[in-house]
Amino acid sequence: MDEPSSDRGKTPAATPPPGVTPNFVNPPTQAPMLNTGIYVMLPLMLLFFSARIYTRTYITRALGTDDYLCIIATAATLAYAGVLVGMLNLKPFTPLGRHQWDIPVAALSNEYLKLVILALVTFPIAAMLVKVTILALYRRLFRPSKWAHRLIWIGIILVLVFYITTIIILLAFCLPSRGVPWIVRVQSGASPTVQVNIALSQGVFGLVIDLYILAIPIWQVSRLSLPPQRKAGILLIFLTGLLAVASSAGGLATRAQVTLEDPNFLTSPYLFGLLEVSIALICSCMPIITMPLKSLLAQTISSWNSAKKFSRSLISRLDKKEPNKHEEQLPRIPGGTLSGLRTFIRKLHASTPTSIPTIEFTNFEILTSETDQDYHEHLRGLQGYDVERLAVRDLHNQRETR
Image (cartoon, rainbow, N blue to C red):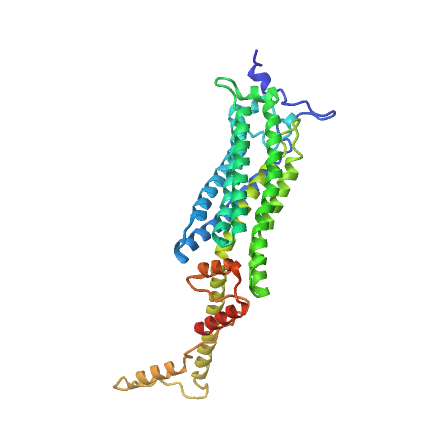
């Protein structure tokens, strides 16, 4: 027989440790930490995503398969974050972030348990799509290299097979039969065990595959026939992937701490899962938006320098035209013609500098509307570019821009 609802609201979901009293009113919780992480990472991720789509749509006009995959991956990441927000905003309170003995059995409702399974399904979908997005971008950048092409396809197959398999196993063991309450699966012990084991396996695989994905561009760029400074700059762009690797390592460490005796207290596995997919999405945008951002920065600083030069010149002219204090300050009667006004305009035009010197950016590449294609040409140079020819071309571009 089912327990009365009044008893379910007073009975803790687990036996507390010796000396600990269950607290259903104001217990310690980690929910605020997860809530803060969601609202910090999502705007940052969407900012980079918007910059990528804008760059590919309006600047380079080269939307590709990797961009469409990025759109789908972003939607999946938002879905995962939406499920977490739903878990955090359950009424009257959420079990997530509380110790198991601080949760009444009644709080483990069907709605909460459904959201837990939904979070465990949307995360691998988002992680799978984000990693495939990055590999699709590499396929676009490193197309001439046969070895890179093979490594990329191996990575895509491994990612798809692993995550789809874990999703199928999770649903097979954790979905209750029709008409059976979700709490029955939890009380049987089979569903929590599968959840913990799958989460741990996803943490291990996520770290390994992220290292594999990061190694591909490092190996490819190291073979480019480019000056050391430029090669280091390109490598630095791809090394932002170390942030994704770090979040994967943190996710693995926190998943290893989850126990069946207290599975709801740690929100860090959910938080690191969100960090893993959102930071990986940001890293997938970096090779695309970096060059336009450099161009925008160079133009902004140049415009600022020009504005300061013009303002100083204008102030200097006004100071020179200021009348002497000892001179009589009487109004002058204008002449009957416009010759005086024309003379003033000619003098003002002659005093305005025709060309304002701008800052030379020796560390920035001169960028045009075809920056993305030119950048891709650098990365495709695996057959061996002539470094001297590249230097001559850069010098020619600099002279044209002047």
